[in-house]
Amino acid sequence: MKMRRIVSLVLTVIMIGTMAAVAANAVDTGSYSAGAGYYNSAEASGRGYADSAYSGSDLGATYTPSATTWKVWSPAASAVKLKLYKTGTDRENGAGVIGTYNLTKGDNSVWSVKLDGDYKNVYYTYLVTAKNILGTATETNETQDVYSKAVGANGNRSMVVDLSSTNPEGWDKDKHVTHKTKTTAAVWELHVRDFSCDPNSGVSDKNRGCYLAFTEGGTTYKKQGTLKTCLDYLVENNINTVQLLPIADFDGVDEIYGASEKDRNWGYNPVNYNVPDGSYASNPYDGNVRINETKQMVQALHSRGISVVMDVVYNHTAGADGSCFTKTVPGYYYRMESKEAYVDGSGQGNELASEKKMVRNYIVQSLQYWANEYHIDGFRFDLMGCIDITTLSQARTKLNSIDNNILMYGEPWTGGTSAVPNGPSETNTGSYPKGVGGFSGKFREAATAVNVKYDNVSKEVTYGWVSGSQWGGGTSTVVSGIKGAIHDSSDKSKTVNFID
Image (cartoon, rainbow, N blue to C red; front, side):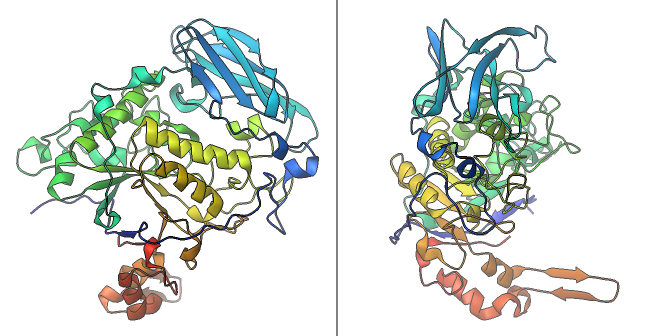
């Protein structure tokens, strides 16, 4: 009997590419007011953030062997400095400061500096001087780059990276593995560490719980040669798509010690969106290593015909006040209830304002980057209900320019009361862009959910339709789900039915 250690087997019917839909496009000023209870501090302070939006794709550090250019968008700043470090943390041998350099403000509030010479693998931060989010005082904060592509351990310092040098052997021949018919995607959700961390997984000790575990073939339970594990197990069970729980750099695990049973995290508290997390890398100190090993993981999955979907968390960050976004442009990137309070539609204390031009540009460019640089084949959106339809539509268009069959789907709900304008809804799938699907949570609940509610007086247990209950709409809801409908929607092209 096969041993099945399932995080979540998602039995999917992904019908997101067969029927057209017109996305609702709201007028976008970049300083959107979403109605009562939503305060845009940038708009109220008259700083003109909307007028200074920058559409270029060269923010961050642009490396060549002869010179590196750093660019920062910050209409709030009165001064920006670049600080170069020898190492990614002060905990390493040889740690020290190389120097500090002034950036010059140009058009569209883009600050920049160009330094001649080879700055490959040099670590850096910015010193941004700006009024605080309340506008009561001018402060200087040190921060990593919002547009980091490489970082040191724990992501507090960015790194200048030559991305071409991070490519594993044969990377130029690696291609996207996508499904011409999206309904053929059999999606397996997994956590990078949990996939191979068990001592009985058959994976080598050095690679257990890491990206490189995916590169090992021929693994068996207890190395006994009988029961296939890890990558071979996926192939044996005809899994043609894996959905990786978030691997973008997240808070909650000290990368220096790595993920462990006592120090692990699901990954839903992002810090640096465009960098793989270092807790799964063999060396978290060197910013190149996590990039190379993530690419090796994708390459290994592709070599076995398996498509790679990333779980992405563009609805919130690990924290707002101390984030690189707030330190770079106070009061802009998040939806605000007031000067002092964040909208909390994510249920995690903050909510990114996807409708603002620079936030929208960031999300769209980030998705493009992962698809191009890491050959990611699809994206599953956490709390997609917090992201406006226009942003999803623009992202879909950009991904189509890479591969029409790159998957886009997510949770069409929020984690709290959101101020998102024109957001997706589980009950209004017709407004979704063509090629974007939403989970049918009600189908799952009606079909299989077990709900236990206990208090001091009574205990209530309800079961799903499979167990003979009519809970959650019962038979009619299950029938609608099987047909590919969500709730009362007649649009069957954008439903993701799943059971876990």
